[in-house]
Image (cartoon, rainbow, N blue to C red; front, side, top):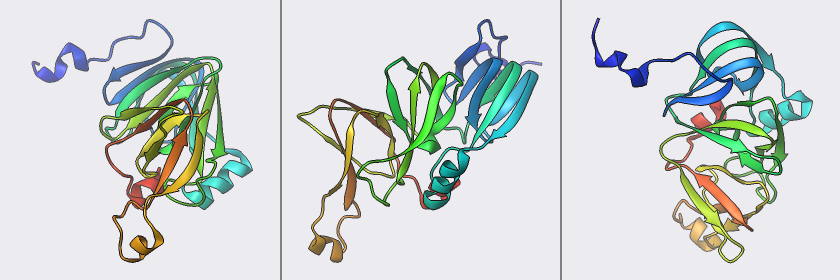
Length: 225
């Protein structure tokens, strides 16, 4: 049988080292030897001796998810084998987090990660109950994090001299050391008259970067993630 479908760039090869790698722009391959974690429902294929177990977020995490629609429903993947992860054909990226790093990521943009990383849901300081939600996922420690993004991401440097303002429905993540607060770009009078539809943004200050995607999350997508 012959077809471009069977070209080498589409063929899954046997893993030579354990851990995470890009299968292609839309999926991540993970050679499991022990345990890793992924968002529930993200596994599209596997081979080998693997078990999948739903992982709770604890009482606090479940409450935060119920209140805001945010959070990160996880599953643990254990054993020896290979698994492939993807979500709605979104673009995939691997972030190598080193000791001392901390990255804030919207739960809807997390695909999978090493069990050596620490994960918790934290309040987004100054964000209130608006936009993309009050809670985001913070990763620290040492290991790899698989991130997804609808479209090609925009990474914007943040400096003490030049804060960055982002739409809360478009933000993917940011350096965890940045300070966050709400910024109102319209006057009350302008908002009452209809305004531009971009009344409030998340302001990030300090030294680091922010990642945004070239689209806003619809209420249906945000609540389903």
